[in-house]
Amino acid sequence: QVQLVESGGGLVQAGGSLRLSCAASGRTFTNYNMGWFRQAPGKEREFVAAISWSGRSTYYADSVKGRFSISRDNAKNTVYLQMNSLKPEDTAVYYCAAGRRGSQVSLYSSPHRYDYWGQGTQVTVSS
Image (cartoon, rainbow, N blue to C red):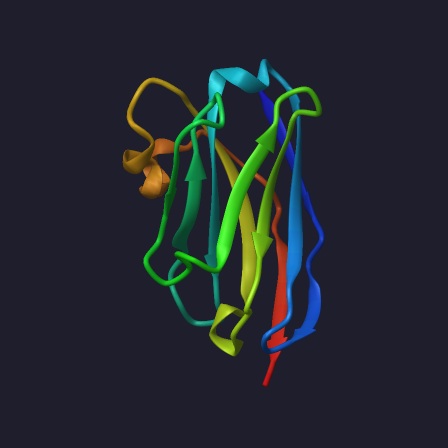
């Protein structure tokens, strides 16, 4: 089992920044690629970003490319999502997820690649 706990969400004005964190515990963190997804009210969960177990490879949804950055600190068992130039349409509950490594990181845009999910953290961007 892997337990994931997100933090760092909140209310921010459009154009502002937030940094989400996801702390992992349980099994070996480097056995997993990590991802961030989000779900807005009335919408399906959508992919945001993914990072390989080593941190060397990343992949982003087009909607966040150039604004968001995913990173990880394997010594701290933590993955981060730095969100800049936030827009009202970024408002959602953000979830981190862990999926066993073994495939190229672009394939981790699918939620089916993931075995464990956090409870989510709310991000609200006001206009």
